[in-house]
Image (cartoon, rainbow, N blue to C red):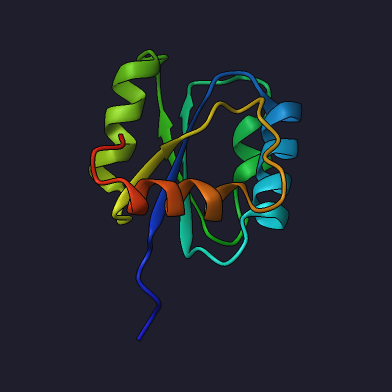
Length: 114
């Protein structure tokens, strides 16, 4: 049986191909021990962003035919998320070692957080 997903990392992208690739690389290296999934919502980018994210392990893609805006794209991903915690991350972030473990631990330690 697959390990349950603890954190769903949600990234909304619009024309961020180069930065999105660096972000996804950093997540895969720096996430730590927490079981996670990544959901990338692409808001009709025309720069090849989809190709940058497609086929990466643990990454699920939602592709919009038009730019629906940040909030609506976030809500699309939330409906698909399987994690008990939702993590919204901008596509130009490059997380550092242990970031996800620390974030999940802090949220678990304080039920009023979030």
